[in-house]
Length: 296
Image (tube, rainbow, N blue to C red; front, side, top):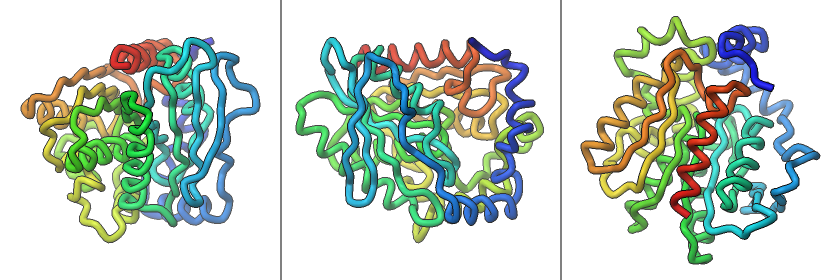
């Protein structure tokens, strides 16, 4: 069953999803709350029958592997979940991950990277690179994907891997955070229409996530990186999302660098719309699955 798109902004406000992002105090409160009461991150007890799940560890970090149960797997994708660097993986992420594994016939690796106040961009980047290096030994393609904060992690990892000599990685980005300076001059125009994200809280979270790196370091803000020799990008973004203006900049910069970019922009859609239980979200999920399937 799908929800009408028009209901989503009201639901976001009703659940106070915007609270950590709208004010500096909201962000600080959310960091303290998440440290005091960590949320459960494990997959749901009931999963679709066409996938299997195992879990391992990278040091103290849980790393899940979701595989198709029939037809074999022809590749890998590392999925970095979103959540504003303070929220862990949720049921919507798991549902998309299961769909990717089953319908794209691909194995999905899901690291539960450390959130604020303990994790930072440098640590997440190193984790993604270790996982990619290990999966490469299979001899199959290894792609990257992520949404929101996880989109930042995924694209920053693609840049670092390219710099390490691994070019041409396919990357799927869902409403990614691209420039953590949050300085795009078009953001104030979008802000009144965005029911989820805000500027003041996001700036606090961004500064803490950067750790000892400048906000303009590509490990923190991948929009500042050199995009040459990246593999194909699929980018999904809604126009009621303050991250949408930077999505346009990424598309322009990537195409100028010769990167093959597919831009799924949805007029009137909110942040992370492909993860939502709407017809528009379902259509975007199908495009994501198709993009990963065609490259494996």
